[in-house]
Image (cartoon, rainbow, N blue to C red; front, side, top):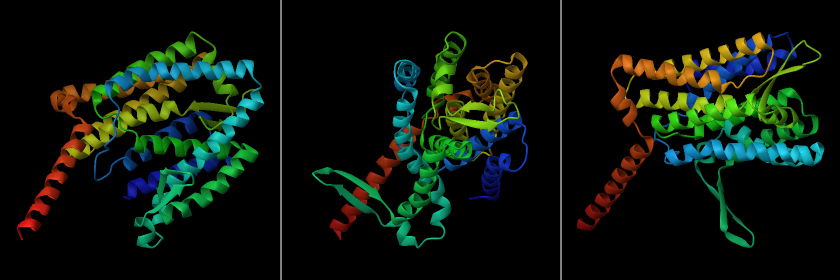
Length: 346
Protein backbone atom coordinates (compact mmCIF):
# COMPACT_ATOMS: atom_id res chain seq x y z
CA UNK A 1 0.00 0.00 0.00
CA UNK A 2 1.44 3.31 -1.11
CA UNK A 3 1.56 6.42 1.07
CA UNK A 4 -1.37 8.20 -0.61
CA UNK A 5 -3.55 5.09 -0.25
CA UNK A 6 -2.63 4.79 3.41
CA UNK A 7 -3.40 8.49 3.91
CA UNK A 8 -6.82 8.06 2.27
CA UNK A 9 -7.62 5.11 4.55
CA UNK A 10 -6.62 7.05 7.66
CA UNK A 11 -8.56 10.13 6.52
CA UNK A 12 -11.68 8.04 5.85
CA UNK A 13 -11.48 6.40 9.27
CA UNK A 14 -10.91 9.76 10.99
CA UNK A 15 -13.80 11.40 9.14
CA UNK A 16 -16.11 8.52 10.04
CA UNK A 17 -15.29 8.82 13.74
CA UNK A 18 -15.10 12.64 13.85
CA UNK A 19 -18.84 13.36 14.52
CA UNK A 20 -18.50 11.46 17.81
CA UNK A 21 -16.15 14.16 19.12
CA UNK A 22 -16.66 17.35 17.14
CA UNK A 23 -19.40 19.01 15.12
CA UNK A 24 -18.91 18.23 11.42
CA UNK A 25 -20.91 19.96 8.71
CA UNK A 26 -23.05 17.14 7.24
CA UNK A 27 -22.75 18.48 3.69
CA UNK A 28 -18.94 18.45 3.83
CA UNK A 29 -19.05 15.07 5.55
CA UNK A 30 -21.20 13.58 2.77
CA UNK A 31 -18.86 14.83 0.04
CA UNK A 32 -15.57 13.87 1.71
CA UNK A 33 -16.79 10.47 2.94
CA UNK A 34 -18.15 9.46 -0.45
CA UNK A 35 -15.08 10.68 -2.35
CA UNK A 36 -12.63 9.01 0.02
CA UNK A 37 -14.58 5.75 -0.15
CA UNK A 38 -14.46 5.81 -3.96
CA UNK A 39 -10.74 6.63 -3.88
CA UNK A 40 -9.92 3.76 -1.51
CA UNK A 41 -12.09 1.27 -3.40
CA UNK A 42 -10.58 2.24 -6.76
CA UNK A 43 -6.99 1.66 -5.67
CA UNK A 44 -7.91 -1.63 -4.00
CA UNK A 45 -9.40 -2.76 -7.34
CA UNK A 46 -5.98 -2.56 -9.04
CA UNK A 47 -4.61 -6.11 -8.95
CA UNK A 48 -1.84 -7.97 -10.85
CA UNK A 49 -4.41 -9.90 -12.90
CA UNK A 50 -7.56 -8.39 -14.43
CA UNK A 51 -10.93 -9.62 -13.11
CA UNK A 52 -12.14 -12.76 -14.87
CA UNK A 53 -15.82 -12.05 -14.17
CA UNK A 54 -17.12 -8.88 -15.77
CA UNK A 55 -20.55 -7.42 -16.49
CA UNK A 56 -21.94 -7.88 -20.00
CA UNK A 57 -23.95 -5.34 -21.98
CA UNK A 58 -27.06 -7.48 -21.50
CA UNK A 59 -26.59 -7.52 -17.72
CA UNK A 60 -26.09 -3.75 -17.74
CA UNK A 61 -29.33 -3.27 -19.66
CA UNK A 62 -31.27 -5.51 -17.28
CA UNK A 63 -29.80 -4.06 -14.10
CA UNK A 64 -32.18 -1.04 -13.80
CA UNK A 65 -35.18 -3.33 -14.38
CA UNK A 66 -34.03 -5.79 -11.72
CA UNK A 67 -33.29 -2.90 -9.36
CA UNK A 68 -36.76 -1.46 -9.96
CA UNK A 69 -38.39 -4.82 -9.22
CA UNK A 70 -36.45 -5.17 -5.96
CA UNK A 71 -37.19 -1.59 -4.93
CA UNK A 72 -40.92 -1.99 -5.58
CA UNK A 73 -40.94 -5.33 -3.75
CA UNK A 74 -39.38 -3.71 -0.67
CA UNK A 75 -41.90 -0.86 -0.85
CA UNK A 76 -44.79 -3.35 -0.89
CA UNK A 77 -43.28 -5.38 1.95
CA UNK A 78 -43.03 -2.31 4.15
CA UNK A 79 -46.54 -1.28 3.17
CA UNK A 80 -48.35 -4.56 3.86
CA UNK A 81 -46.19 -6.20 6.53
CA UNK A 82 -44.93 -5.04 9.89
CA UNK A 83 -41.95 -2.74 9.47
CA UNK A 84 -40.31 -4.30 12.55
CA UNK A 85 -40.69 -7.80 11.09
CA UNK A 86 -39.19 -6.85 7.73
CA UNK A 87 -36.29 -5.03 9.37
CA UNK A 88 -35.66 -7.96 11.73
CA UNK A 89 -35.28 -10.31 8.75
CA UNK A 90 -33.08 -7.81 6.94
CA UNK A 91 -30.93 -7.36 10.06
CA UNK A 92 -30.17 -11.10 10.09
CA UNK A 93 -29.31 -10.98 6.40
CA UNK A 94 -27.04 -7.96 6.72
CA UNK A 95 -25.45 -9.41 9.87
CA UNK A 96 -23.96 -12.20 7.74
CA UNK A 97 -23.12 -9.93 4.81
CA UNK A 98 -21.56 -7.41 7.20
CA UNK A 99 -19.19 -10.00 8.66
CA UNK A 100 -18.05 -10.99 5.16
CA UNK A 101 -17.62 -7.39 3.93
CA UNK A 102 -15.93 -6.02 7.05
CA UNK A 103 -13.60 -9.02 7.31
CA UNK A 104 -12.58 -8.65 3.65
CA UNK A 105 -11.98 -4.93 4.16
CA UNK A 106 -9.79 -5.51 7.22
CA UNK A 107 -7.94 -8.50 5.75
CA UNK A 108 -5.11 -6.66 3.89
CA UNK A 109 -4.15 -4.81 7.08
CA UNK A 110 -4.33 -7.94 9.24
CA UNK A 111 -2.38 -10.17 6.82
CA UNK A 112 0.80 -8.15 7.29
CA UNK A 113 1.07 -9.25 10.92
CA UNK A 114 0.40 -12.97 10.37
CA UNK A 115 2.69 -15.81 9.23
CA UNK A 116 2.93 -16.27 5.48
CA UNK A 117 1.42 -19.77 5.48
CA UNK A 118 -1.66 -18.42 7.32
CA UNK A 119 -2.29 -16.20 4.31
CA UNK A 120 -1.63 -18.80 1.62
CA UNK A 121 -2.64 -22.27 2.87
CA UNK A 122 -6.27 -22.98 2.04
CA UNK A 123 -8.63 -24.81 4.37
CA UNK A 124 -11.44 -26.60 2.52
CA UNK A 125 -14.68 -27.20 4.43
CA UNK A 126 -17.21 -29.73 3.14
CA UNK A 127 -20.81 -29.22 4.19
CA UNK A 128 -22.31 -32.26 5.98
CA UNK A 129 -24.82 -34.18 3.84
CA UNK A 130 -24.06 -31.84 0.90
CA UNK A 131 -20.49 -32.83 0.09
CA UNK A 132 -20.55 -31.08 -3.27
CA UNK A 133 -20.83 -27.77 -1.41
CA UNK A 134 -17.41 -26.60 -0.24
CA UNK A 135 -16.03 -23.39 1.22
CA UNK A 136 -12.38 -22.40 0.90
CA UNK A 137 -10.74 -20.00 3.35
CA UNK A 138 -7.44 -19.24 5.04
CA UNK A 139 -6.49 -18.82 8.69
CA UNK A 140 -6.04 -15.09 8.02
CA UNK A 141 -9.67 -14.84 6.95
CA UNK A 142 -10.74 -16.57 10.17
CA UNK A 143 -8.73 -14.06 12.21
CA UNK A 144 -10.24 -11.14 10.25
CA UNK A 145 -13.75 -12.49 10.81
CA UNK A 146 -13.41 -12.30 14.62
CA UNK A 147 -13.53 -8.48 14.94
CA UNK A 148 -16.06 -8.45 12.08
CA UNK A 149 -18.39 -10.74 14.01
CA UNK A 150 -18.21 -8.73 17.23
CA UNK A 151 -18.72 -5.50 15.34
CA UNK A 152 -21.79 -6.81 13.49
CA UNK A 153 -23.21 -8.07 16.79
CA UNK A 154 -22.88 -4.52 18.14
CA UNK A 155 -24.60 -3.15 15.05
CA UNK A 156 -27.49 -5.64 15.31
CA UNK A 157 -28.05 -4.85 18.99
CA UNK A 158 -27.62 -1.06 18.94
CA UNK A 159 -28.20 0.07 15.32
CA UNK A 160 -25.86 2.99 16.02
CA UNK A 161 -25.21 5.31 13.08
CA UNK A 162 -21.45 4.76 13.40
CA UNK A 163 -21.83 0.99 13.05
CA UNK A 164 -24.19 1.54 10.11
CA UNK A 165 -21.63 3.79 8.37
CA UNK A 166 -18.66 1.49 8.92
CA UNK A 167 -20.58 -1.45 7.48
CA UNK A 168 -21.89 0.72 4.63
CA UNK A 169 -18.38 1.92 3.77
CA UNK A 170 -17.16 -1.69 3.86
CA UNK A 171 -19.89 -2.70 1.42
CA UNK A 172 -18.92 0.19 -0.88
CA UNK A 173 -15.20 -0.60 -0.80
CA UNK A 174 -15.81 -4.29 -1.51
CA UNK A 175 -18.27 -3.48 -4.28
CA UNK A 176 -15.87 -1.12 -6.05
CA UNK A 177 -12.94 -3.48 -5.50
CA UNK A 178 -14.64 -6.69 -6.66
CA UNK A 179 -17.11 -5.61 -9.37
CA UNK A 180 -15.91 -4.94 -12.90
CA UNK A 181 -17.82 -3.35 -15.74
CA UNK A 182 -15.42 -4.93 -18.22
CA UNK A 183 -15.55 -2.07 -20.71
CA UNK A 184 -16.49 1.58 -20.88
CA UNK A 185 -19.32 0.75 -23.27
CA UNK A 186 -20.92 -1.46 -20.64
CA UNK A 187 -20.30 1.24 -18.04
CA UNK A 188 -22.04 3.86 -20.18
CA UNK A 189 -25.04 1.56 -20.67
CA UNK A 190 -25.30 0.84 -16.93
CA UNK A 191 -24.93 4.45 -15.84
CA UNK A 192 -27.41 5.66 -18.45
CA UNK A 193 -30.01 3.13 -17.32
CA UNK A 194 -29.54 3.97 -13.64
CA UNK A 195 -29.63 7.69 -14.48
CA UNK A 196 -33.22 7.21 -15.71
CA UNK A 197 -33.99 4.76 -12.86
CA UNK A 198 -32.95 7.24 -10.17
CA UNK A 199 -34.87 10.15 -11.69
CA UNK A 200 -38.06 8.12 -12.11
CA UNK A 201 -38.20 6.61 -8.62
CA UNK A 202 -37.27 9.83 -6.80
CA UNK A 203 -39.15 12.49 -8.77
CA UNK A 204 -42.20 10.60 -10.02
CA UNK A 205 -43.01 8.19 -7.17
CA UNK A 206 -42.71 8.17 -3.36
CA UNK A 207 -41.13 4.70 -3.49
CA UNK A 208 -37.40 5.48 -3.26
CA UNK A 209 -37.65 7.98 -0.40
CA UNK A 210 -40.15 5.80 1.48
CA UNK A 211 -37.94 2.70 1.29
CA UNK A 212 -34.83 4.68 2.26
CA UNK A 213 -36.56 5.98 5.39
CA UNK A 214 -38.12 2.61 6.33
CA UNK A 215 -35.13 0.38 5.54
CA UNK A 216 -33.21 0.07 8.82
CA UNK A 217 -30.06 -1.49 7.38
CA UNK A 218 -26.64 -0.30 6.16
CA UNK A 219 -27.78 0.49 2.61
CA UNK A 220 -27.16 4.20 3.20
CA UNK A 221 -24.66 6.35 5.06
CA UNK A 222 -26.01 8.51 7.89
CA UNK A 223 -24.47 11.88 8.72
CA UNK A 224 -25.53 13.55 12.01
CA UNK A 225 -27.00 17.05 11.77
CA UNK A 226 -27.92 19.66 14.38
CA UNK A 227 -31.53 19.74 13.14
CA UNK A 228 -33.85 17.90 15.55
CA UNK A 229 -36.51 17.57 12.86
CA UNK A 230 -34.00 15.92 10.50
CA UNK A 231 -31.29 14.32 12.67
CA UNK A 232 -29.43 12.70 9.77
CA UNK A 233 -28.49 13.45 6.18
CA UNK A 234 -28.43 10.32 4.02
CA UNK A 235 -26.54 9.09 0.99
CA UNK A 236 -27.41 5.75 -0.63
CA UNK A 237 -24.63 3.24 -1.17
CA UNK A 238 -25.62 2.97 -4.83
CA UNK A 239 -24.61 6.61 -5.31
CA UNK A 240 -21.10 5.58 -4.27
CA UNK A 241 -20.68 2.06 -5.71
CA UNK A 242 -22.27 2.48 -9.16
CA UNK A 243 -20.21 5.49 -10.27
CA UNK A 244 -17.29 4.14 -8.23
CA UNK A 245 -16.91 1.01 -10.39
CA UNK A 246 -16.75 3.25 -13.47
CA UNK A 247 -14.06 5.43 -11.85
CA UNK A 248 -12.16 2.25 -10.86
CA UNK A 249 -12.31 1.04 -14.46
CA UNK A 250 -10.74 4.33 -15.57
CA UNK A 251 -7.91 3.82 -13.06
CA UNK A 252 -7.25 0.26 -14.26
CA UNK A 253 -7.28 1.54 -17.85
CA UNK A 254 -4.58 4.04 -16.94
CA UNK A 255 -2.53 1.36 -15.17
CA UNK A 256 -2.83 -1.06 -18.11
CA UNK A 257 -1.34 1.59 -20.43
CA UNK A 258 1.34 2.73 -17.99
CA UNK A 259 -0.18 6.19 -17.76
CA UNK A 260 -0.20 8.22 -14.55
CA UNK A 261 -3.88 8.49 -13.59
CA UNK A 262 -5.00 10.40 -16.66
CA UNK A 263 -8.59 9.26 -16.97
CA UNK A 264 -8.90 8.34 -13.32
CA UNK A 265 -8.38 11.98 -12.40
CA UNK A 266 -11.07 13.05 -14.88
CA UNK A 267 -13.57 10.46 -13.66
CA UNK A 268 -12.86 11.19 -10.00
CA UNK A 269 -13.17 14.94 -10.55
CA UNK A 270 -16.44 14.38 -12.41
CA UNK A 271 -17.76 12.32 -9.48
CA UNK A 272 -16.78 15.02 -7.00
CA UNK A 273 -18.36 17.81 -9.05
CA UNK A 274 -21.57 15.78 -9.50
CA UNK A 275 -21.81 15.06 -5.78
CA UNK A 276 -21.20 18.70 -4.84
CA UNK A 277 -23.90 19.77 -7.30
CA UNK A 278 -26.30 17.24 -5.71
CA UNK A 279 -25.74 18.77 -2.27
CA UNK A 280 -26.13 22.33 -3.58
CA UNK A 281 -29.43 21.57 -5.36
CA UNK A 282 -30.74 19.55 -2.40
CA UNK A 283 -30.14 22.45 -0.01
CA UNK A 284 -31.48 24.99 -2.48
CA UNK A 285 -34.82 23.20 -2.95
CA UNK A 286 -34.88 21.54 0.50
CA UNK A 287 -35.96 18.26 -1.12
CA UNK A 288 -34.45 14.83 -1.78
CA UNK A 289 -32.49 14.64 -5.04
CA UNK A 290 -31.57 11.68 -7.26
CA UNK A 291 -27.81 11.90 -6.90
CA UNK A 292 -27.14 9.99 -10.12
CA UNK A 293 -28.91 12.79 -12.01
CA UNK A 294 -25.84 14.92 -11.34
CA UNK A 295 -23.11 12.31 -10.81
CA UNK A 296 -23.59 10.32 -14.04
CA UNK A 297 -23.20 13.35 -16.39
CA UNK A 298 -20.25 14.47 -14.28
CA UNK A 299 -18.35 11.18 -14.44
CA UNK A 300 -19.18 10.25 -18.05
CA UNK A 301 -18.95 13.83 -19.31
CA UNK A 302 -15.57 14.62 -17.79
CA UNK A 303 -14.05 11.35 -19.06
CA UNK A 304 -15.59 11.74 -22.53
CA UNK A 305 -14.30 15.31 -22.96
CA UNK A 306 -10.82 14.31 -21.75
CA UNK A 307 -10.80 11.29 -24.09
CA UNK A 308 -11.87 13.35 -27.13
CA UNK A 309 -9.37 16.09 -26.24
CA UNK A 310 -6.53 13.53 -26.19
CA UNK A 311 -7.71 11.87 -29.42
CA UNK A 312 -7.86 8.46 -27.71
CA UNK A 313 -11.48 7.51 -28.34
CA UNK A 314 -10.65 4.25 -30.16
CA UNK A 315 -8.36 2.65 -27.50
CA UNK A 316 -10.75 3.91 -24.83
CA UNK A 317 -13.77 2.17 -26.37
CA UNK A 318 -11.80 -0.96 -27.29
CA UNK A 319 -10.57 -1.56 -23.75
CA UNK A 320 -12.17 -4.77 -22.43
CA UNK A 321 -11.00 -6.46 -19.24
CA UNK A 322 -12.77 -9.74 -20.03
CA UNK A 323 -10.74 -10.12 -23.24
CA UNK A 324 -7.51 -9.25 -21.42
CA UNK A 325 -8.27 -11.93 -18.80
CA UNK A 326 -9.12 -14.48 -21.51
CA UNK A 327 -5.87 -13.76 -23.37
CA UNK A 328 -3.82 -14.15 -20.21
CA UNK A 329 -5.55 -17.44 -19.38
CA UNK A 330 -4.88 -18.80 -22.88
CA UNK A 331 -1.23 -17.72 -22.63
CA UNK A 332 -0.83 -19.44 -19.25
CA UNK A 333 -2.47 -22.61 -20.66
CA UNK A 334 -0.04 -22.60 -23.59
CA UNK A 335 2.87 -22.21 -21.19
CA UNK A 336 1.60 -25.17 -19.14
CA UNK A 337 1.29 -27.31 -22.27
CA UNK A 338 4.78 -26.27 -23.35
CA UNK A 339 6.22 -27.19 -19.94
CA UNK A 340 4.55 -30.62 -20.02
CA UNK A 341 5.76 -31.26 -23.56
CA UNK A 342 9.35 -30.35 -22.69
CA UNK A 343 9.25 -32.63 -19.66
CA UNK A 344 8.04 -35.55 -21.81
CA UNK A 345 10.82 -34.97 -24.34
CA UNK A 346 13.39 -34.99 -21.56
